[in-house]
Amino acid sequence: MQIGTRWAVGGEPPSAVPVEMRAAIDDEERTLVELGADTSSWRWTLTFLEGLPVVELDDGTTIRLDGADVLVTRED
Image (tube, rainbow, N blue to C red; front, side):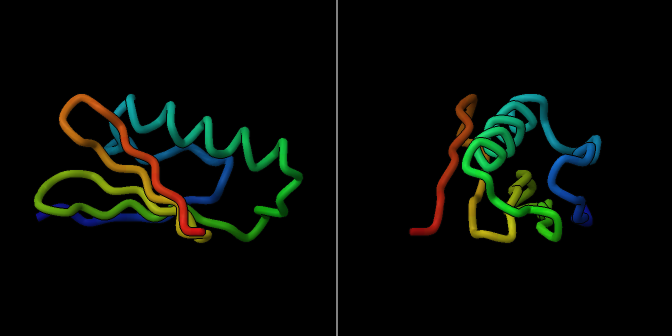
């Protein structure tokens, strides 16, 4: 059984987050800074779906693996 965790935007992701997903997290955080978003209280949540890591930001942005690809989806 794998247990998820939460961490602050700008913080270090847990070691269970794959390198490919870390790059996507960095890209999303950089975009938020460029947009001037106040993310001081925002958190990422790591969970596992069918054994695969899924990372979701408080605004609904979701990052997951699809084979070797990293998929990023955003709520409208």
